[in-house]
Amino acid sequence: MKAYRVNGGRPLEGTVAIHGAKNSVLPILAACICCAGICEIDNCPRIADVDTAIAILEHLGCRVVRQDHRLTVDAATVDRCDIPGDLMGGMRSSILFLGALLTRCGRAELSLPGGCALGRRPIDLHLWAAEELGACWEGCSPSLRCTCRSMAGCCLPLRCPSVGATENAMLMALGCRGVTTIENAAREPEITDLARFLTAMGAKVVGAGTGTITVEGGRPLHGACHKVMADRIEAATYLCAAAGCGGLVELVGAVPDALTPVTELLERSGCILQPTERGLLLQSDGRLHTPGPVVTRPHPGFPTDAQAPMMAALLRAVGITEFTETIFENRLRHVEQLRLLGADIRQYGSRALVRGVAHLHGGILEATDLRCGAALLIGALQAEGDSTVLGVHHIRRGYDNIVETLSAVGARIWETDYTG
Ligand code: UD1
Image (cartoon, rainbow, N blue to C red):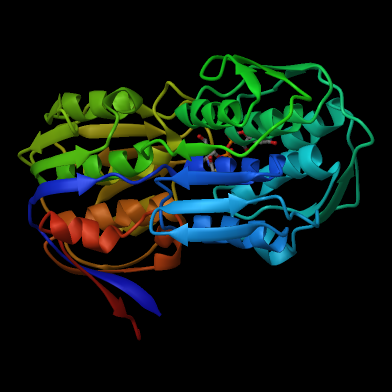
């Protein structure tokens, strides 16, 4: 079994190049099939979820060529509208092919998506949006067949600002007659990046980044080139690592504005952050104090994806830090694992109280989801002695070259075979 071995207790110093955003490239790759042309996607991270997206595109009949961090997707040859269960189950974003397939083929045969185990992750809003726009779906869990004779734009007031449902509604709206208005839309920067790509394909999308997005459907779409935005969660992860370990790290390509909720907390914890010509610089003496409560919220609030890394950064911070997870019902699974490093954390449902300890020690830990995995590495990098982090497949789903990246800033981390 593959594992990461970490010998912790060293500051991090140097430069980290931030890759393209996982949560941006996945909807963009699904969107490629909305046109029958060739799309070129630059700054595409080399992560397992992108491999899954490529496998889905190829299954649907696309020709995909990968050259380092550039993907060329030729969707002219799409010849099927079903996605097998093993590909659907590989990641949550596979559900975005629902909207893309309805627009391209007028039907989609799918099953329930996979993704990180964070508690219940229903897709009712995605299916509701499809129905409101004129699609019918049949079948019961886990298989699902969605068909539409003709779809017509309408107003879609979302019950909550779901990122995936907003993106799916945008993709479905491309194939509708007339205008679709998505209300209470998610405002995450990745939605704006998707809108930029759709616009380059010939779509008319207005309001991305605000709570109301309108899409004018039925316009002819063509192939387009796009550079994926920088991954703000990857950047947040490396900021948290450097904050907790101490050191001086410049994140090249990071966009400071997209990171404000994270950088504000790190500044309040005692770090110095400074935008640079190339990105963002963090300086930390590794002696943090509590920044006050951390509450996850939809954008522009504190991102749920950065909650686990931030908790790991503050394990040794003086004082008590209260974390409240409001987006997902079970997203504190890292707590139990971080305790194995000697962390003092009490959990009350979706709340966790972290009392900073003077020292962490090494341990054998297991990642249960992607951001949990990131948090365990950040904890292990601060711990004295050796740690082993299992469950590396979760980490590979969302981090491009994490071992090399951390090694380049002085971390002692290796991939090994764990035999127990
Ligand atoms: C996306 C991100 C994920 C991030 C999350 C919240 C991608 C690939 N993933 O996930 O990294 O943690 O946004 O920022 O972009 N909900 C429903 N019904 C639905 C859909 C969602 O009740 O049909 C609920 C969810 O259970 C959750 C909340 O809405 O409680 C937010 O989920 P959502 O924004 O949809 O997250 P994802 O798009 O799955």
